[in-house]
Each structure stands twice: as structure tokens, then as C-alpha cells.
Image 1 (tube, helix red, strand yellow):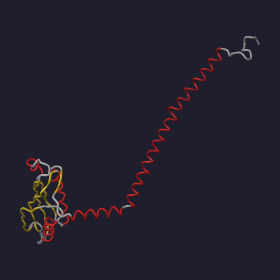
Image 2 (spheres, rainbow, N blue to C red):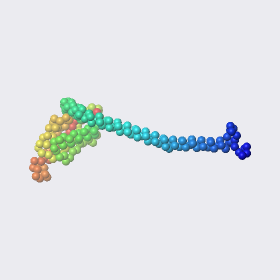
Image 3 (cartoon, rainbow, N blue to C red):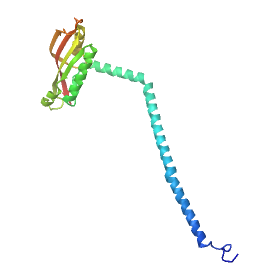
Image 4 (cartoon, one colour):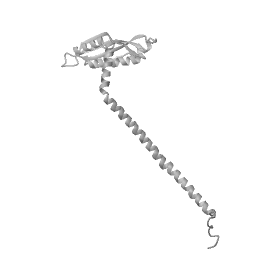
Length: 204
């Protein structure tokens, strides 16, 4: 072996050896960076997303459990609220516009008809006409007209009129037409009723 074939012990490595070590070290750094970017980071991101989803699920379950546990209290509170509203007497419809008031009136008339056992054939609320002629001042009272046609017996009609007279909302009957419904054969006690109504509303 010649003296130049390898570095003497204790001396600085040959340039070729240093370059190989630098290349190997750089490759290791790049490999670690790639593993961190494409393996570790996606795993951490997915893990955090799963933890967030699990936390949201646990919160929803806890909320539903709390609602289920307080169902009786909620029913009692709703009943008490209804009793307080009933004790205040009859009230007019209040809404931000006549269109919303007309929608509330339509729902009220449909609910009252269903509660009285009427088969409603037509229900019209003239919200568009009122929107053009409405008083613009806040708190000004005005009327929303409506028409209701239905089939019922005398007991259903009496129940509906009683709701209009004593119900929680003020609804006035301006015209009523009652006739026998000859189309319903086999039901001689069935009536065809047409009501013209109007309800005072306050636009807030």
C-alpha cells in the first residue's frame, strides 16, 4: 500500500470523503423534510379534524340530552306562556308589514278552520291590496281583508264563529253566506259556507 492511498490517522479526511458525507447528510435532511410534510403533517391534520368532529358530536349529544332531560320543564314553560297570553285578552295582529300580517292571518284562519272540523275549499287574504294602501306610520292600525269558503255542518260553523268571537286574535265577520251543499249527496246536514272577514293589524 502506498502512502497516498489513504489519509494518515488523525488527519482531515480526503475531499471525496467529505463530499460524500455532505451529500448523505443533505439527502437525510431532505428525506426527513419529505416525511414530515407528506406523512406527519397530514396525519396531524386528520387527527385534529377528527378530534374537532368528535368534540362537536359530544357537544350535540350533551345538548340533546339536556333538552330531553328538561322536556317536562319546557312543556310547563310553554303552558305557562300560553296561559299568560290568554289572560291578556284578545290581541290584534302585529307585524313589520301587511304582507307578514296577511300570512299570519291566513295561518290563523286555517288553524281555526281545522280545529272546527271545516273542509276549506278556498282561503284568500288580500295582502297585495293592503300593501298599496297601507298607512305608513309605525303603529297605525289597518285592516287586512280575507275570504273563506268551506264545507261543514252546523256544529263546525258554530265552533268557527265562536273562535272568531272569543279567540286570542281579533277577526271580524263582515258577511256570511250559508247554503245547503247539494253536491254532497248522502250528507244532508253539510253546508257550504262563505265568509268575508277582516282583521285589524298594527304595522310596527
